[in-house]
Image 1 (cartoon, rainbow, N blue to C red):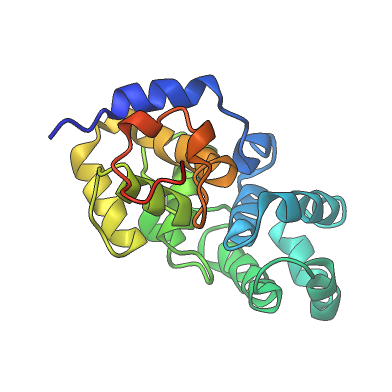
Image 2: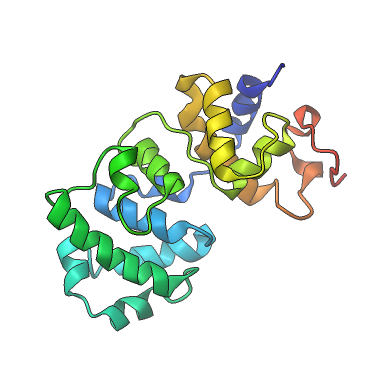
Length: 210
């Protein structure tokens, strides 16, 4: 099967706009973990200002354990599932201090032990915070990988495993960076902007919006 992934990545790189996690690389690994958790099921345009404002107040696991829960909840209002995420932030802050000597673990196995941290969040951290090879699959990566015909999968976790098999390891870190950007700006879930898509001729999606 000719996947055209190198050609597609090359085209997408020319129009690439920095993702939220690329913008946050100057933050500590703990802050990046919190930002990644909060970004799940929430638009970057909503997440970024809330995260920036929050980190002016609290930056470390110790800070988040000291803050009143209702105050934290209020600060995160607007984030998807903000109540659940507020609880998880305080739980994982406690666990990082007690179980990991105050440092974010640098392995997938270690990170998924933390409350509220799944494979996607952990792989994003490996990719953006630790510079390790990882295929971080969210709703955008899952959707676009299927539309391009790279995979035929029903879940994000299945897409992750398939992409790890078919893509060279040196390209794994490009997957999230390029496809999330493309999904947010062009390849929408409903009515994708196929007329403006630079890779439309390489796409296998049968319901193109032309």
